[in-house]
Length: 479
Image (tube, rainbow, N blue to C red; front, side):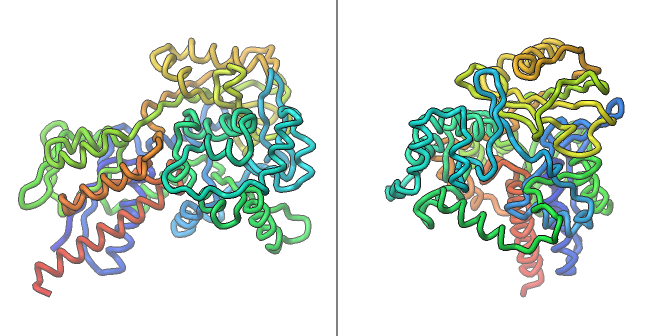
């Protein structure tokens, strides 16, 4: 008998879960009918690459990291490995906005750590006492107390308060659009806790990693590979290839799920009344959406999902004609400092970061708005949001000519906020699922917000579904 699986949500998590499940079922020679239901008019969720006036806009994320390798590995299986594009070698430097000026992070400075001691001499946005405190990080003993810790507390403990404020908050706060003092290290950056335990120092850990990478063979004349990747036609390429590979499945857009029930099998009811029966159901949705659907059928899971906080984000793509754009420093963009009340999280120099993003000589910028500024602007008009973004940029980029276009994208509740105790909440969610065999959850609400983490959880969920279906089939055969 052909097994039936319904996956609700057609973002990167839902599509990856469907694709990995199809691979596993082929390997096990088990017939399965996979339905992927997406409420929006397109697949991809926050991943959306849009051509406009010769430019290529990324409305959501514009790339993914090479480590952890789950996204790169998926690209290899999809035949996309040769299409990967890294950050332009001459523009891999990030800047920090401080007092209305842009300062580049020096060579040998990785994330929060001065891998090369000489980089400590090129941090003009820090006071001398803060630089000295940062240099002392290898002498700070590792934390030995159990329990969760905020990212802000970890950075203050190891590098000092000024570094947490000047570098930690703009750098990591921009990723999650939140205060790093409310962000769980164990949930958001478990690698930091592991590095401190193993090496006793984050600087020592980053230096060991850099030494390992330096030992890898690089051909003469080549630069080290990028740690960020995309495609020439944008991240939408990954979504489109997944959809293409799933052509034998039932993929639907504009297919909003109204309710989920359980009898002898799972029953998914769509808006309009259509019902689909399934042996297994996977909800690849934001936590609050999953909670709403599960309130009647799995109340314990719904209750456990509700405390998972979410943040919103606004992106503003701004294009300038050739010769009209601001004079940009070499680099991929900048992050803003909340202490300066800059009110935007940062800006990507899209036309410099990746090739083929703008016509020759033209400029494309992408502004991120999060936190309290985002909440205040979500209901504003596109014109008001665009004016706000341009006003902030003018203070640091000296824009004098009007742009060709301003394109605003709003993403409500897309970013998980891994607050202290988040992993305990995840454990409660996963524990509650034992009461609902055949029900699975994927997405960024649990153990990682980036594309590689979403792919990792989606593939693990597919493995669990495959094992459940196989066990169910064997039980019916009396094996």
